[in-house]
Length: 444
Image (cartoon, rainbow, N blue to C red; front, side, top):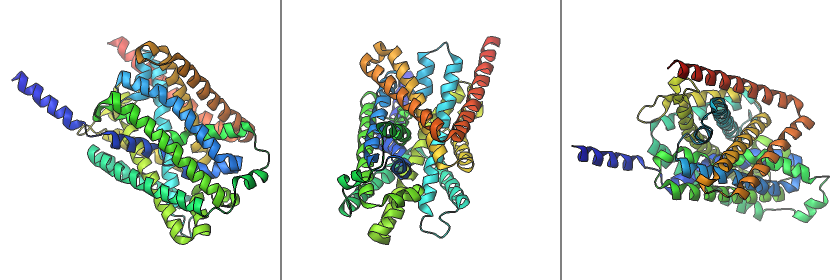
């Protein structure tokens, strides 16, 4: 009887391993190439112009530094709680620290959901007379969040296959868009450099730090550890492959955009810069292609983020640092966590603007990645990590965080107050839940 039960358990576990390398790369790329180039292009060009592609590459290098520690910790712990679980297990005597990183990372994911859905809506309505209506844009963002919330509740395997289709279709479309932009260039890099004002290395590094959120998403692979085959092999392959492809895609499209579309058009239409520029350069069919690419990119980002982050939220809730109801699962799917994340993302869409959401997301994931690099350094003898690479990552991620804060202080102090206020609320909630959990454990 025991032998039969063991055999059935093995079969059950194998059936649950429904995500292979293509699906995992799709989840990571879906999380990255979403708000990504369609969100950061206008903001980057407005700040550093012709140097945008360089900042995008530097942003990718910062992401690679962060990925190193995530991969080492992910392979060692094999826990779908990812960021939260890694920190909790590495520092078991710090309940507040575990709670804090849990609240920060979950709301970081919520901000990226808001970012992707806002970008989806901007492109979806870009061809209509009400394209500039902020409320229509926010309403459409809410609808697309609801759609992918429903898909994630429906089925893990169904989500994986839909994610495959969306991600790999959008990659083909983005390659076509890149070719069209480069083929229709009406200037050159030397000419743009001559017309450049006073772009400094500091400004390039600030933009590279702000664009870090465009690479956020590779962590979602680790959240699927219970549904993947061979984590030791597939986690590194999926994450490094996805980051490389994201850097390549962002670089080529940004290069094509600055060579083809006048800077004023990119800056004045930040929310849907590529679509607005394509309409003037290559006509209506080109605009439609860009819009389809943007909608696929943001859709897969929303879906992948909901999938991975909801599982992490369920793990944290099960540990007592979020409301217990968020840990409940139906057919192994964290339904309540999915619904809660979708609802809060829509609230953030209603409350914030594109730059605020973008900068909050970048600061959050830089801070969280910095803590992951520290955790990896602390147990490097267990994760087989290089001390030099850990230290390099710590320096790079700390520099990125400081640069964004410096930029906010120098130019947009009111946004810093908003972001700081949000962090204060999250920190307070984390403290209350950690205190509650500690009291409960002392009673037991």
